[in-house]
Image 1 (cartoon, helix red, strand yellow):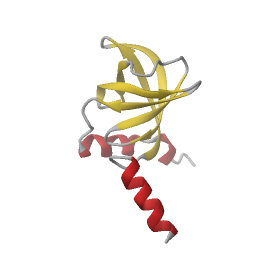
Image 2 (cartoon, one colour):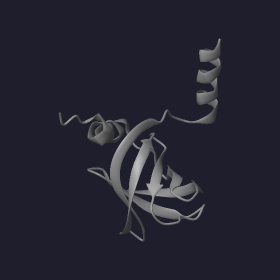
Image 3 (spheres, helix red, strand yellow):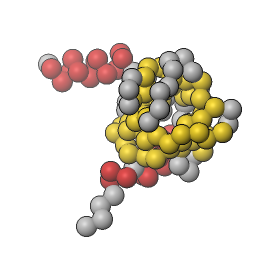
Image 4 (cartoon, rainbow, N blue to C red):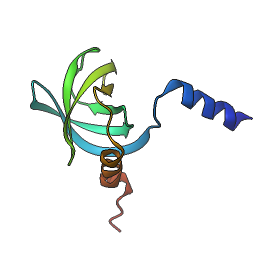
Length: 110
């Protein structure tokens, strides 16, 4: 029963499932990269970012993802070192899978 309740909560609260990742990216405005960030989870519709400078809720910015390139996104929430953004256009399945394949947490150097 508990698993069904959790699954229902996920389905109601989000449009797509999030996957934990660790990807270096850049954020900027006007098409210019201005600051480094790290994508710490990702879905087709948005991302959670580890940030190093303040981002204001409601700001539209460019998130430059590895291989995929710049994506327009809006900051939905932000605190000291984390922010959530929603992509203006969702990622397609192929781009999403490409980013998951680049995830640094899945690499094993031993």
